[in-house]
Image (cartoon, rainbow over all chains, first blue to last red; front, side):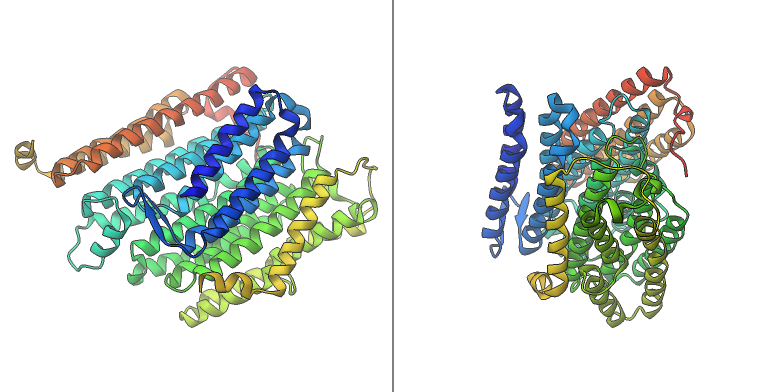
Length: 456
Length: 106
């Protein structure tokens, strides 16, 4: 609870900086503030408390995921210092919107009442619509914002309808009451329909097949930093809250529901990877790679009671490598109007450090050992085999092999092609973010128990 | 209040809301004018609000009615952002037909 209040206070403070003309100091102060909030969250790690008539329930699950979101936001705010260089007059708006987005994200994992869940998802989505369309003069960004807005509000409508049917069946929005009532035998038919509608809405937000069609367009058109935010923070948040929601509703008792999850997971991985193979725009490629990673993360929904730890581990491995990869993309594609793979030619010669970091991030996403991505997949697969879904794991392994194909396309372009032009300037902050993110990723890979035991 | 609900039956409220919701969904899918698409989204949300109020009376519980206030506030915020995006599209493109938005493909 204190986390949420502190984050919102920080967001208001960011807006006030604009009035006091402190735009230069806004990024460092926000990062310091977020570090303070992170400390506050970690200090509440072992407490389980509920606030305001169960509106917010702080548990181990919520505080670990909140810490992950805060860490990701720190990276994204730090990258903003360089990215918004030419928009100094609006920087406090951009940073404040990101902080409010974080508040929505924290509300989405620590809700104790479906009203709080709905408000959290709306705060997050509305902030993202603004960020997607934030490059006002650029028609591509406008189009991305419009598409994301239409898809997002459509999905919100479906989620709202689902919540309404669940309320009709249970007579309450409180998740503990719903959880108790859902174990009784006699339930109106509205309850399962409600769960299905909410799940469909959330699958829109995580961009799983067949609800993924908006993702590549929106990722390509949005400003690069917003794409980074969508593919790391927003995806992880949606996945974590879908997990929490379904485990609260005891959705995993039904065999047919599990069958649907298996099919959606298989379809997401396969379609995402095969479509990614033929992309030449790096942002589109990472969008489809995100679709396939959503498929992997959906595997955790098959064993809801035990897989919270592996979801956290997979989410942190994926999002940290995503941050490292996107910080290199931000450096390479600064002041260019597209993110074509041609821009990466010869990066291994002109800038060996960033090329190595991008290689490491892509290898982690592909699941090569010593990086966290490998152990995340390992834990996930062994858990899914124990739950008895061998066929799904076989499809997943085949897909990991396919994914190596397009990740190596980018790596080869960096090391074997000739550089087409010199790049000047060494933005220290991008280097710092990239190095810290990849070091954290490798540290997670070397000591997986650090994260896995948190939610065991 | 409960008397009326006994006469009409909660099922009919659900049918009405589902029909309104589907009208909204088809509006989003088939209309090409952005303003009408926004209106269709509002119809979807308001169909749900109607059902919230009906369920609230059905359960004799005020929570559903309170939720309607939240969802109305959220819908207003959402449409404000949507209209702002639409204005910037109109400035760049001079039209609000969704079919004209096809720069992003691959």
